[in-house]
Length: 120
Image (tube, rainbow, N blue to C red; front, side, top):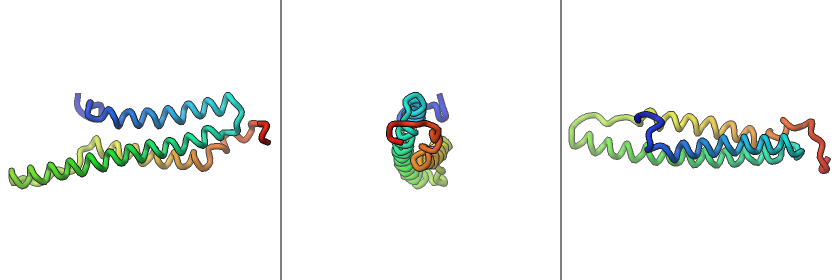
């Protein structure tokens, strides 16, 4: 199978799944147990971590691909190829996840303003 669902990208898909799962679980946890969204807010930091790991893997993969393309282009005397679309797409996903995670990290508790806890 080609494209983003290629087996070569299973780690990337795992990181995306972990980022989404951390937010979903923390949202439900904060919704069901009154903590004024503190767990959800902390999950934003976890999402940023997964986004950073995803971006690191993509940057490393693109650097390796460019190095391979340069060697091939020198040997075969053809122009070097650009980064594959799949890696660029994962970079976009990492950027969106990082921005969303940062917003949740900073303001996620505001979604649960109506909850009353023992801390209030």
